Length: 250
Ligand code: AMP
Image (cartoon, rainbow, N blue to C red; front, side):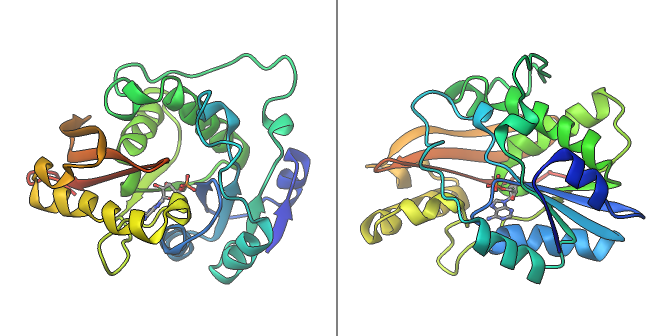
């Protein structure tokens, strides 16, 4: 596996043939590996990006604390068949004078958008930049972040981007908790309490979240993707999850 720290290194390392792109923020777990493996199976080469995008964290969110371990991540990526890991510094993607943003207006507003203003504008922008830099045939995203899938899907259609979006089902621990890089912040007791999130979604029963700090527990039609989505805070950790609802084509 080649590591590219700059756009110039990425261009030099860019594989030939059809590329599957997996955008990530690192701190890899089996959810990321499922995306790498799907990309490996369906493309000539796999490029993953590892970038904790400062623009998508609001003031007071966990940007500084977000787990980072590039050594461990590059081992996991290499073992999972990634050919090029693009891990730029923020100054590489947002040099001084940077001022261009892409806004997927309506889909960015509800759910996460209501609690994380500006989040999806930053997600859409960094994804468009990665698509332009890597020029993938296919890009891979997790169902865990359903609204992100909808926003990026709309971006691809609205701007006629020449790539396909592939969505990988949410990978969960044996107890049902969706894998997330943020789960490492949970104490044993918090982790136990966090299990109410997948249970409430599976049972379609908000009352199972009683005692947790609930940002939302809502059915949503995200551009034709019908989900029950929720966000809760357990201690200082914010967790999101969703389940596709009946009638959803996937
Ligand atoms: P992140 O590094 O958290 O930004 O996630 C990178 C990609 O992995 C996103 O497309 C996520 O939706 C996806 N992902 C994160 N957690 C999971 C999971 N538990 N199952 C499947 N995909 C996931």
